[in-house]
Length: 154
Image (cartoon, rainbow, N blue to C red; front, side, top):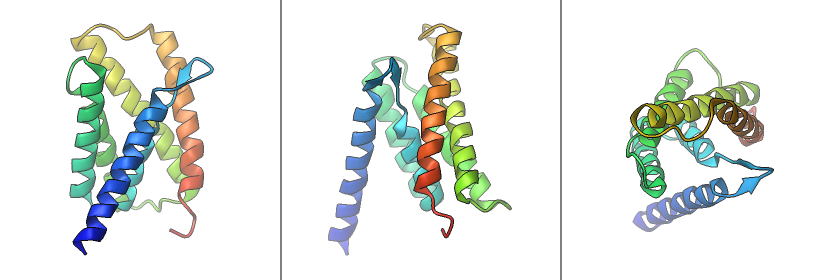
C-alpha cells in the first residue's frame, strides 16, 4: 500500500515537473501555463487538503525558480484550488464545457494575480497589452485541454 502511494506521488511529481518544463518553452512567442491545468485537475479530483498542499508546493517551486518575489505563484495556485473547491461542492456539475469555462477563468485569475503581485511589489514583468495577449493565449489553450481532460461521465 505504501509502495503504491509512493509511486503515485512520484508520478504526480513527474507530471508537475513536465508541466513546468513545458511552461518554459515558447510557442509563437507565447509561453504555456500547464501548471495551472495540473492544479485545476488536482482541485477537481483530489480532496481539499491534499490539493492545497500540492498547490502550495507547486507555487513555491515556481516562485523559487523565478528568482524573484516569493508568494505570487503560491497565492494564485492556492486561490485556484479554493475556487475550484467552491464550484465543485456547490450546485455545479463539472461537465466538460463548464470545466473548460472554469479553467479559462482560473487561468486568467492565476495570471492576473501573479502579474499584479509582481507589478505592485517588484518590477512590472511586461507591458499590460503584451500581458493581456499572453494571458488570453494561456487561457484558451488551457480551456481546450480541460475540455478534453474531463469526461462528461465523471
